Amino acid sequence: DQQVKQNSPSLSVQEGRISILNCDYTNSMFDYFLWYKKYPAEGPTFLISISSIKDKNEDGRFTVFLNKSAKHLSLHIVPSQPGDSAVYFCAARTKYGNKLVFGAGTILRVKS
Amino acid sequence: DTEVTQTPKHLVMGMTNKKSLKCEQHMGHRAMYWYKQKAKKPPELMFVYSYEKLSINESVPSRFSPECPNSSLLNLHLHALQPEDSALYLCASRNAPAGSEKLFFGSGTQLSVL
Image 1: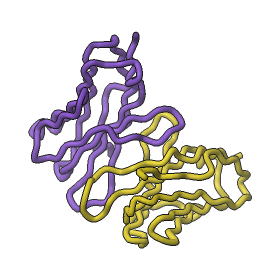
Image 2 (image 1 turned 120 degrees about the horizontal axis):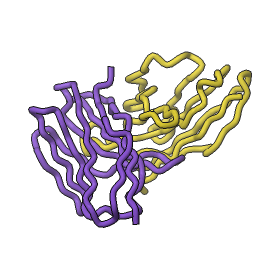
Image 3 (image 1 turned 180 degrees about the horizontal axis):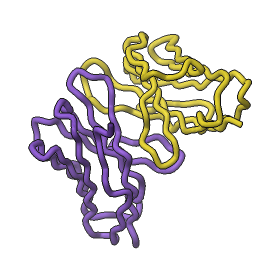
């Protein structure tokens, strides 16, 4: 049972344009969401997070939007840079829980 | 120091070998995690230690044995592994109980079981 779903296995974007990565979840008990970026043979690196009491969080070029009614979140990267090319994982956590559940990941390729 | 250090980076072992993976952090985090990641799959939780006590075991086979000797160290002892156990093993830590919810990951140990 996949509680966190990233339905797009890959995304290709031109340098300077916007990248939008999507994530859906099924567990209404999730109260905290995170995005991680991962390069091959390295551990995931934290990118940005959002609490369920918010609908938007921004950090530089990265913005995460949360639509609780649709159980959907998205990561916007503007402008996209070639160094952003990596696998992006959406992750979610339940309140008081110790577990972080990851989506399958989306491979982002930014072309120069 | 915001690093989680894992050793070794690469490990090749036979099915009869015994080996250990090591993880160290000096951020004062009191929750530490082992994840397993197969190629093109998301990280899958194996174990969680909270205040040096095992709090979550995701029904991991007994050929994987975790150990948390102190608040900075986390080990994963391996014995009689199978080829399908080949994967990237990731250690992570978190500032439990309060503070950021984010996990800090190490670079992982790429394990190959022959």
